[in-house]
Image (cartoon, rainbow, N blue to C red; front, side):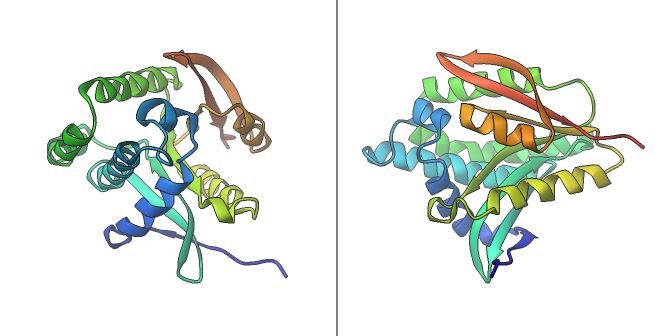
Length: 213
């Protein structure tokens, strides 16, 4: 019997379960290991990962982003953060000002070098995205012991369905540092738009161009 998963938008009250989930899901992620170190061996790296994921969750509610999760009953098994394409400049300006307060804890947990590299990474990847209105998949993760059950695929399909229904969006951009993910995304209609490097880490920039009717 196939398990049914419920995909729902997360609220601010879901922060703790989101941070716990994504900290686990990204523990072996190439970019996270490169930036923060190994959280399984180093408590400082573990604290940095938790702080960064917490920051990303807070940021989603201040900027024009949404967080969606896949639930089995009330247990969160997977989630993604997506940036929507039609935020106004005023929205971004107000959100950016409010975001400054959320950045402060990162300065105590991460070196200036790590924060600078994070900024460089975001600049590199965003410049690789096509210059047209689109959704941007910021991060997507599945609880390690729930992987292989179709949860990630159902979340990705949910995002594509949302994008296809949004007349202001022409597709979805994403970046991955895991070469194994490239073929997975290709099966969902993404193409490899560019391949670049961040430090010595390969970065694969992909785009899903939706059909315009």
